[in-house]
Length: 84
Image (spheres, rainbow, N blue to C red):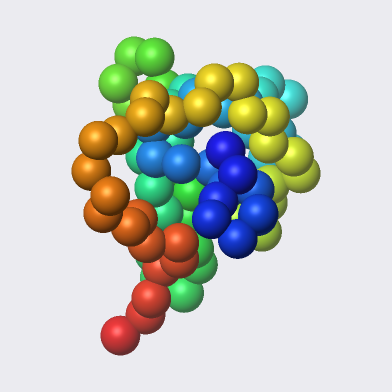
């Protein structure tokens, strides 16, 4: 999806395939970002319902397979994880 400022973004609910260095690629629905210790993780829900946390520093590439369904709400989604 292309954001308001013309930047490409992966929206919550998008289906994607991620190569993060394992032999098998991870395919699932993007659920958002999470902080685990000092690391920022991308959270992907697999077809069986498992949530997979992938360290952003390990991502080699990400394929966007399907955009997230369009929402009626104009609420802005956060674009990053903040540490307190």
